Image 1: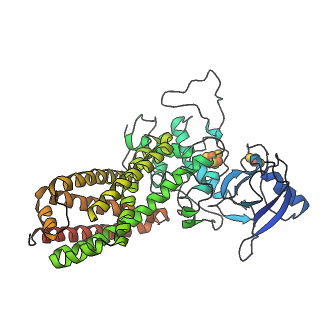
Image 2: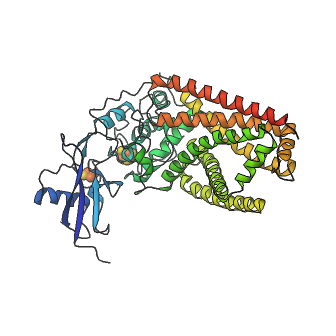
Amino acid sequence: MSSPSTVQLRVFRYKPGDPAPHYDTFAVPVTPRTTVLEALQAIRRDQDPSLMLRHSCHHASCGTCGLRVDGQEVLACVTPLADRGPVVTVEPLQNAPLLGDLVVDMGPFYAVFTQAGMPLVRSTEATAASRPAAGIERLTRFENCLECGLCVSTCPVAATDPLYLGPAAMAAAWRVVQEPRGQNPARALAWVDQEHGCWRCHLAFECSTVCPNDVQPGQAIAALRQRLALGEPAPPGPAAAATRPALAPTGPARRVGLRAWLDPRGRDVGYWAFVLHRLTGLALVVYLLLHLWVLRLLARGPAAWDEFIALARSPLFLALDGLLLFGVLFHGLNGVRVALVGLGAAARRQRGLFWAVLLLTLLLLAAGVAALVAAVH
Amino acid sequence: MTYPTSRAKTWWLLQALSGLALVLLLGVHFVAQHYVAQGGLRTYAQVVAYVRHPAVAALEAAFLVVVAVHAALGLRAVALDFGLPAARQRGLNAALAVGVVLVVGYGLWLLAQVRGGAG
Ligand code: SF4
Ligand code: FES
């Protein structure tokens, strides 16, 4: 199918002082090679010079053009606009203070990043002859990080926890641990070893999915935990006291909050695992209390119990039993996945593990429901 | 080299370990039901006879304690996900600890009542 020649670009608009954000729709001509950034620049040039956006290099190197296109974090300069459908929605990054239209304040992001130790000085290049040092799985220069902030925008924990250190900064801390170059890796470890550090991550791995330069922050966080929990091999240098993150946002962060847990656009399986785990967990807490309340009937003698059993055979109750079984199975099996992945044991296999968890859940659910139906009839 | 144990690490590991223990206990629970309660657990008398088995009572009590701790740690994690400031963490920990004691206490009392019921 040939791409449409005109696309309606639905653009998020907000200027300081506006009561609320809104969307403006612009018709833009599109060729198969037109990028989102080019389309936005064309709008600015030909239709609305007040449109605020950030960009610099135009070739996925500076990290300034991060945006959300149809709900997914991308670098606008290398994201083609064609074949996305007749209407495409463009929004600013989340979990950062909004300055106007598509521009967010990256100040808080850089501030946390700096605390990670800034492992950004390019003093070596990996060449064909390069060999990873002992303890380093493969050569990935942390200079790979563009500081684009896409990972923080997509992270469901950053969406709700303003103190969270965030994926990029913790990936930077892991880089310091891997290759200290004169820095103190123990200090980096102590920095992430806090409630709002690596232990707050829920392994949704959206950060790794959206990262345009294969930094794999999710895997880095799992590796930090593994190092902190298992302790080997030891990095050189004395331990330093943990520093509290000195987060000083320059304005109100546009945190999406709970909505981020339920926004299905452009999300990967790790994210769904996180959301389902949270929802089933909360539901099971409610069930635990309900279960104790029901069991009190046992203490009241046979008559009360028989009444309950009659109720428990109703179709609605059986349907709820099926739902409960799903919750228990998914939460339990995914819990094993979270424990393994969260300690770095299978961080690169988290996707495959998710499908295995889902398959096993459904198989056991089918067996459980069959047993339930047989027990009633 | 091992690192100084931070509270955050301890909580996370406790959450993971209690979760793994629950998976095991649940497995044992189903196996026990299969062998101990062969006629099923439908009538009052069957349930009372089942929980009177000492191993079953121990299993149910252990399950209750672990599930209460795991649930409390889960709620704590959700509260921190929503940015609970450090100053409030102590209060939350205390409230959750009270909740665990109440749930476990009530559950054990129920278990004792049922075990003493007419079989
Ligand atoms: S880790 Fe990846 S997504 Fe995050 S800021 Fe760096 S390049 Fe961007
Ligand atoms: S403009 Fe530099 S990365 Fe897109």
